[in-house]
Length: 120
Image (tube, rainbow, N blue to C red; front, side):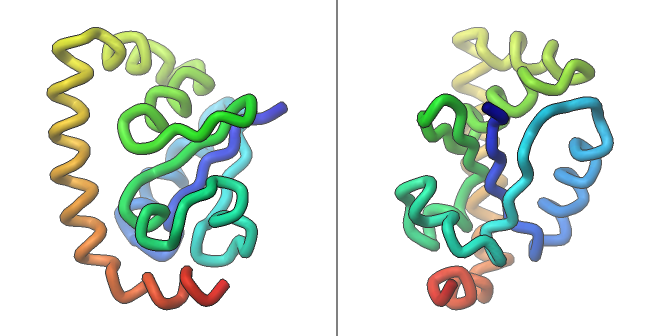
C-alpha cells in the first residue's frame, strides 16, 4: 500500500517542492487537498489542519508536519538520508520548531484557500 501525501497544490511554494519530489523515484500517492474531496475524511483533519501542515498516511496512520516529511523522505531513495538525520533527537526538535514557523507563514499566505477546502 502506497503512502499518501496530502499537500496544497494551490500554494506556489508547496507545489514547487512537491513537484520536485514527484520527479524522484518513489511509490508515493500525491493528493491535492484543494481538489480531493476525501482529504478531510481520509486524514480525519479539518480544512484548517490540512492547510496548516503537510500530511501523510501510511498503514492507516496519519503523520503531520515534520513527521510527514520524515515519512515521505524515507520512501524517496534520494532523500532517505534526510529522514535518518531528522529523526535524531536534537535535530528533530530543531527541525520541528523551524517547520512550524515556516508552515505558519505559509498558512497565513494561503489562508484565502481555507473556504475552498471547507467546501469540498
